[in-house]
Amino acid sequence: MTELWQASATTIAARVRARDTSAREECEAAIARMQAVNPAINAVVDETAEQALAEADSIDAALARGEPAGPLAGVPSTVKINIDYAGRATTNGLRTQADLIAPQDSPVVTNLRRAGAVVIGRTNTPAFSLRWFCRNSLHGQTLNPHDASITPGGSSGGAGSAVAAGIGAVAHGTDIAGSIRYPAYVNGVHGLRPTTGRVAAANLSGADRTMGAQLTAVSGPLARSIADLRVSLAAMAMGDLRDPWHMPVPLDGPPVARKAALAPAPDGMKVAPEVQAAVISAAAALAEAGVEVEEVPLPPLRETARLNIELWMADFGVAGGPKLAAEGDPDSIFVAEQMMRIAGPNADAMKALQRRLGLLREWQLFLAEWPIVLLPVSGEAPFANNSDVASAADFDRIYEAQMLQVGLPSLGLPALTVATGTPGKPMGVQLLGPRFREDLLLDAGAIIEAAHPPIRPVDPFVVG
Image 1: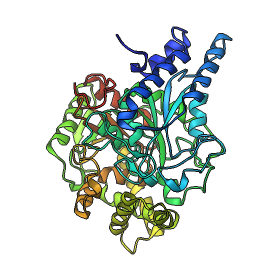
Image 2 (image 1 turned 30 degrees about the horizontal axis):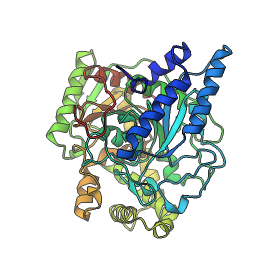
Image 3 (image 1 turned 135 degrees about the vertical axis):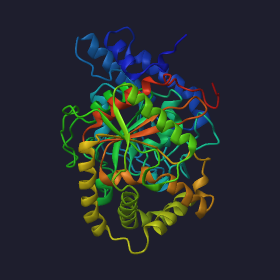
């Protein structure tokens, strides 16, 4: 028997709007699933069940009055604990922010609710949202439901773990250096990093973001189907005047050539055979669907990674550095030291911003000819959990494997992780496209998705 919580967001919303089920029934089923499996994985660190049930009742009442309920009507969802949810703490995994109570909802929460989604919980992140792993001194460690020995990813590790385990159909995440795309990869789900400016963001519980983060950090969805990413993006991308960076650009653009540049090992990076095999297989699926696929040299990516880490660490040294000692989280202290070392003592944010313009120009010209780029998510299969803090050498190996996670945000371009693995053995590929052309990525992602079995929620640590 198929349980209500196993369904996709599009299926749940359709049956709630048709009144085949009620939003309350869907919400109760999702809460029951969360309470059954979350103790094993610690993906949700702040349950909002009471508020969620009240919101579900409001949706059912609106439908009973004949009023529209939105494209995500009654869809159980989660949001990351680094964005504002009115009346609750925006901790970002920090003990020093355990009492930082949000005065109002962030634009993402506002827009999800406006679309009819019901937020059942808030998901874990590493301290400062700093790692590709998910452990902090306030909320503890999140585990990957496929395999507790591998990372659930970060910084949206709780989001990826939750949606993989069937805690909600849609999860919100943020991405400044892979924090949506990598958790999607290691948890065997799909994740979309939108174009900078596509999804409005603002946390009025604290100071505004510094310049590097304004240019690189985004919010976006993780889900078990490409269709769910599409509808979730549309919901999240609704306008909000609290974010001056938000751009009201149409979600669908004009037709382009059906061409994809293939890069199984871009810019000289070392890529594991199983990762390259996944990329080649995805290329075959695109070619079978009539997309012209060709292996071509890409514009620089290694340099864009360097720029992003310089911008991020220049910001972090000002905004985050003083908080490190106060928080005292050993993982974040170690990781920040390694990133500062990589950025170097002479990192110059102004020069990085100047060089960014030229690189983005080069990429825009390339993407005009090759509107889809197919490449790895990471150079390696999912890392052993918390291996980044084992030693400086381990960190350097992981950082090198994550070059594509670090590099793309500095360009502000959209990117999509498409899951291609199997239960117990996550794997995936990455698609990159022009600014504000998430539609192209989702179209190509749907082709790759169709070549693989549908993603089903996994029971924690049960393979098959």
